[in-house]
Length: 138
Image (cartoon, rainbow, N blue to C red; front, top):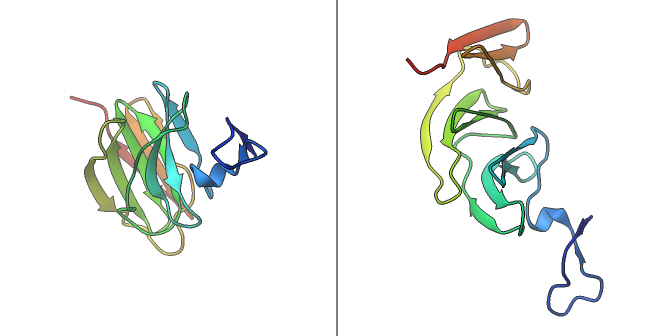
């Protein structure tokens, strides 16, 4: 449960966190006082919530299908969707902006493993394949 000031007409002052943000799986990231993650059961709708107030800054339609695993690096969010799509989204509370998307070349079955960035390289595992992309700025 999420404790907050009592909404008008409420006796308990408690509301379900799902009213603000519901993360099925895939995690969330905290960047400069804002929580970013996918919202909804098997939906992965990109969402930005101000940590201090719980205010939803934006909630957008998912650019791909299924739940999303989320990673942050260098001012961007990497949303890896269950359908094998990777979306690069600006980590900016003022506006939702998709920088780019692409479909992973290995897409048999759900893409659930979390993405990892190390030494300027993005690693994506799918079943018995490991993909590596150079993502460091030149």
